[in-house]
Image (cartoon, rainbow, N blue to C red; front, side, top):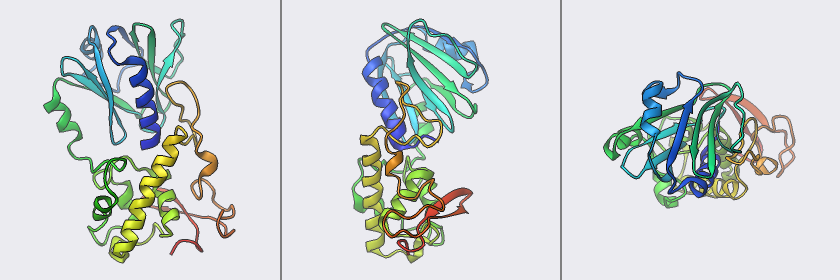
Length: 270
């Protein structure tokens, strides 16, 4: 699933290409993951001018100049792609949006993603109010404070919970824990103040490092220009089960934790 660095990369690309442009046409090629359904969603887009493409957690927020807009969640395999004007639809394409000089296609192989319209800022806030702080713009000490409770919660589960800290998924939870030298299997109650601050610091560092390289393409992720993220080769533990730790050469262990495949180094992480 695209996480904060991947979604933010796409946001920046869409913002650069689309901000200030009017939607000339929109066509829904596959129905079922849009709200409101079918023609009503298309009607919500037509004639609107795109004010900005924002992000909250893993959501892309399309804002229109009249205060309305829609949110898009990429989920497992979703993509917003900038494509040529003569683009021919594929079987995984769901929506096409045409503005002056640009065409955007929403594509989703697994069909878990969604787009959902909002009429004003109040309705948007109701969609996003439950998310935790944004790690790129939140101080390390404030992020560390998010890792205090509930004390019995496993660290990995806390990091995956979007109400705790927004935008972190499986990849960067594993990577941040490794960089902090903390096992994801531990409970929040076992963390010292120094542990929490170190983990919060590494969360910010790894997200920014990945963002600088356009994110991580471990499976299906492509940015809005159809390019792969460049952070894959810098991953320390994620996707490297059985391979030697880049720090101590101990084989990376993979377990299932909080319902997700979880990677760590038994030697470097305590």
